[in-house]
Amino acid sequence: MNKIMFFAHLRDSVGEESVTKDVSGKTIAELKQMLAEEYELKLDSVMAAVNEEFASDDEVIQDGDTVAFIPPVSGG
Image 1 (spheres, rainbow, N blue to C red):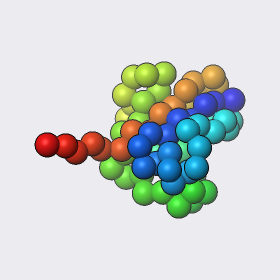
Image 2: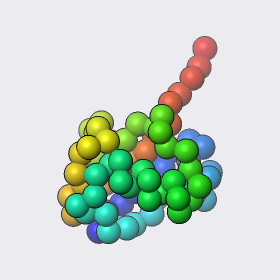
Image 3: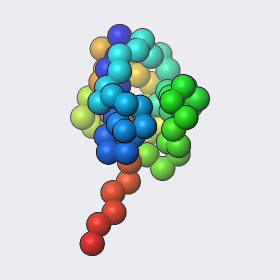
Image 4: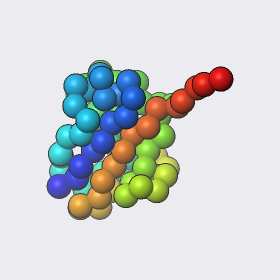
């Protein structure tokens, strides 16, 4: 099983800070597609992290990994 965490407006859209799903063997890109369909999210500009390290879309998720999605931040 994997913990999937959402930050900023993604948390508001999902309605929870995190969900637990079995996504081991999937890539970050596949997980983004799955979550986009399930929660109607736009994730193409969102950064992903696996176990607190930034990850590319082609990284494969292992059992027990924690995946976080972090939207771009603007400020001034």
